[in-house]
Amino acid sequence: MRLQPEYAENIIVATIYQGAWAWYVTYRDDWFLDRVKWGQAFGHDAEELLRPEAHKERYWIPIVNEHTAGAFLKALEVYRVGCEELAQMVREEFLTAPDWDDAVYDLLPSVLVNFDERWLKSIFPEPSGTFEMFVPDRWRGEYVSFLGNVPPEQRYWVIDGRDYFAGSPALR
View 1 (cartoon, rainbow, N blue to C red):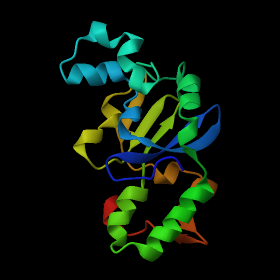
View 2 (view 1 turned 180 degrees about the horizontal axis):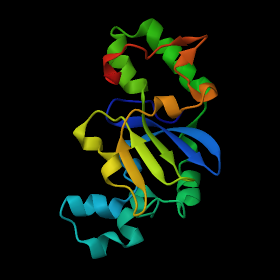
View 3 (view 1 turned 90 degrees about the horizontal axis):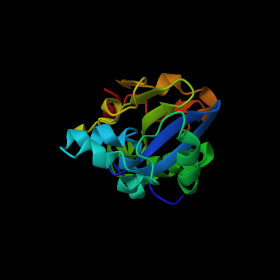
View 4 (view 1 turned 135 degrees about the vertical axis):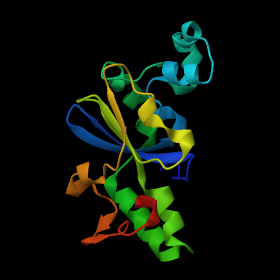
């Protein structure tokens, strides 16, 4: 794993693209899909923000949508992780973390992006991560729990029938 999940910095994200699920641990700011809208919210010039070179830190892609998803996810391939790798991290953290509730904040998936159906769901608990507000045009963004949308075989936090996130304050 190239990056370790770290609360509010490096986040766990699930994607659905061409019918396939994938998990990533990446920098938080990669998941503001429409960087033009995001930049405008901070007072930057829209004309300047439309230039790909203004987004070199995000692979020269100003707006990640169903048309640019392939290039974006290819660039993120080094940050892709498997369910088993995430499950192992949950096991290790559960055994060693001094405060499990704090560890859940690191290990909880923050965002689910469905490129096929053009929607994003976020449960990122910080105001600095209002991903749902910066989705491409004709997309739907919601701040809502999406754990129920994750197929059972992709739920890395459920190990041997035990839901390690159940009852955590992070989900309230």
